[in-house]
Amino acid sequence: MTPALAFNDLTLGYDRLPAVQKLQADIAEGSLTAVVGPNGAGKSTLLKGVTGALAPLQGKVEFGALNRDDIAYLPQQSDIDRAFPLSVVDLVAMGLWREIGPFGWLGRKQRGRVEAAISSVGLTGLESRPIGSLSGGQMQRALFARLLLQDARLVLLDEPFTAIDARTMADLIAVVRNWHREGRTVLAVLHDAETVRAHFPETLMLARELVAHGPTEQVMTAENQFRARQMCEACAGPPHVCGREVA
Amino acid sequence: MIWDLIFQPFADFGFMRRALLGCFAVSLGATPVGVFLMLRRMSLTGDAMAHAILPGAAVGFLVAGLSLGAMTIGGLIAGMAVALLSGLVTRVTALREDASLAAFYLISLALGVLIVSTRGSNVDLMHVLFGTVLALNDAALILLCSIASLSILTLSVLFRPLVLECADPQFLRSVSKLSAVTHFVFLSLVVLNLVGGFHALGTLMAVGIMILPAAAARFWATGIGGLIFVAVAVAFFSSLSGLLLSYHFSLPSGPAIILVAGIVYAVSLVLGPAGGLIAQVLPRGPVQN
Image (cartoon, each protein chain N blue to C red):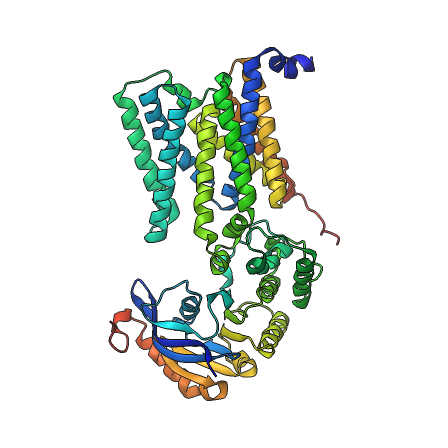
């Protein structure tokens, strides 16, 4: 089976300082993969590399049957201006951008789909609320509704369950599992080991370099986690002393 | 009585009617742009841009005298150069937009002051700085109305990408290549409206009609449409009242218009239901859904 994504000797970084080094891994089409690792392991950087926001310093990201237009990406929440006067409906409807573009009309059919997406994340009744008045959990639900409408074959989530309540998390995990059932490829940066073990069949463990990749129970071992922490501590100084040679 | 106060000046004097039309045109064009400047937390960018176009207008004035065309083109060139260069520096280097913009507008301003001072002081140059709203000729009125029309049309076409660029630029970049285009077209609108505004209100006052009504509207409306509507209404009211004040009390009209807008802002700050001082202090029950 051709992979949805292949990281081929991929090195990503900022100001020529690598944050992800020589990563070699295939993400299978339709897989549900957790990306885990200590702080500073390059998890968010990896997602930015996939979206194309960050160009590789070396190597490349190869897409199988997909291309960059098939990606929906949920960054860490801090990037949205919550003070901007948008309603929940406005925010969620942005998910239809690829369909209606900058000028297209939002027809009755599309409005129906926006409503359906809002209801499937449990926000019915809050459609006209300004996004500034939403709680952290409600905001995350709204962003998931937008992702639903993007209808993408590859979904990238960056710490989607951080700082939200348990019930919201359960609801949103159900959304993610549903994407998995529909055959979409999902790559999610996660912190909580329990969540990963309970819901994510595949795990990719990073500590700048690849630690392990495969079925979650084989990757999420105490030994691997210890090794990842050690590798990252070794990298805690200036990056050029890190591990192997840097080009 | 009311007739004498409000309608007589416009009925009797053609220059007052022209001034009112000119100010309304500036209000229609510049105020919605100001609303977006405010929403993007770029209110001070308008001020910087107003300084940036000043030397261009001054050069045009020195080359061709009090010529509408030369001053407009000079202002546009200076403003666009500063906008493009600072945008370019921001996207290519590590410098943030506020710092790169400040650097370029200060250079532009210093250059302008230098050029002006080599030619000695000139009373007519005060017209550039403070506007000539009571002496707008046909060509100037046509220019102001054209800029307002172009500005409104462009904003309507660009509305959706612009809202996204303001609220969630990362999302816009992830789904479309319009982010950079939107940003530069928007900055061009800022420059265009300031250049139009300086014919009526002067380079320094033009930014006032852009920003003050938008800031006042923030205390009355919460949606984007409401903000634009209230801001334009405030700008119209300020134009009318400012012109009348300047007529009845022999005040310079540009500052009078901006000061009325300033008073409306101060009143909104206190009384406005959307986050005004009184609304913040008064205890209110929860909204019943």
